[in-house]
Length: 617
Image (tube, rainbow, N blue to C red; front, side):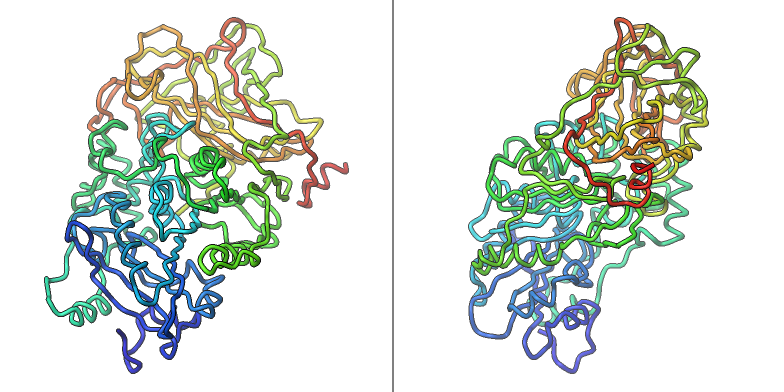
């Protein structure tokens, strides 16, 4: 327990700023034992007042150094005598045990909930709240259920989602269609995925442990450390990709085992929610349309929406930026308009409803609320997909050729005449990633024309739209492809082209062709054979005003966001060279390559000035 005369730590200062002053609250630093004897570093911010109080639990691999996640509604929590418990996952910070990505998180969460419910200050009702890793900790635990766990708010989740309907083999976002998402996961693992870290001594005196925990932390380079980012960028450019972190001098992480294959044995130890976890705890799922886990979040809501009290909110943001609203917001480089939304009021009423038994504080709201990018307005509904949507196909076609944005690649209402478009996939000169990912060092949404100028990128577009089109829901592709190598990748990107030519990315997915029949049945390609393949993994809500064009890009790489394919059919994470691949996309006639979209047919009221001006012109 901290004393009044001690200088506050950053965490304590953050708590005091939100109202947890030393007169009303105590802060305890504990090493909490789990069922197997491993002790987890746990900070308990609890009221001194006698009585039974509600609690919010945050489990994280990151330092417990602030309450920023509660900054919007934290004062209200402390005014109502909430307790907040912050716990580091096993193996992270001062928690004992070896670290593993989402390793034993469910069992440890259950043990921690048992402990909270048994405390004298607890009313036996606990909520969980957080973004990214703190959201992943909630998913499987909430599906299994616990008597004390009454409500969750999971934001920017996805890395905790395994195989559920519509999502197969992404292994918590590490893969997309069997292609490793290289840069984001290398970025994360070097500072955060280290398996063995310094530990506290086994001191019997809990007071001495508490004093040490309070004053010291384990420091590692952060995401935004310029020197770390520079070293990572240089290492990513070299092969083999499986040694990207070891080249930087990083201690052992799980990255080296995970990147080997989406079916590697290492994935068996990751606590992912899957289709066998059929329960649900009341939850609000919040994400951004350009978050790396947008598709998985939407699919999880689809999977669980038949349970009561499941909600979905999708905002026009990237990773963990949903609550940073503005009257004139931008998503990366793209203006999106007024993103104001009452997150703080919703979250406060949500937890009061379930943890303080105040149902009247909760104002009923639609189960689904999604921001329609391009229109600057929100759509609502009670189920997903929205009932006002219908599937529509756009067929790929070209006459002279679809390479580059100057080609004549088209998206057509009906299949055209049989034709082909060929493109190269050169692992020594891969197509550069522009936008997407976590958006740590570059805009998550950006003009794609620099990539579309390359001869190894196929571009298919509608004519300038005469009537507005809203795509709200999943986007997938059925493609007919052939290649002259044993294995290759196909990337599909959805783009909104403005009247001035600016081409903003909306989402991207991929398929490693050896996995065309499923991750459990990899098979090399036969040169010249034509294969029908499916690409999934995109969801969005975007309004294309008159004058805009719907566009897709097709390429053989997106580096360094995704690992390069060396086209040998072997272990790409160990490879340092391979052939340049020639891929052929077949379209029209008996091989009608197409994209499938969900078109929103309900009314749309554009709120952004640019969309209104286009509508009125």
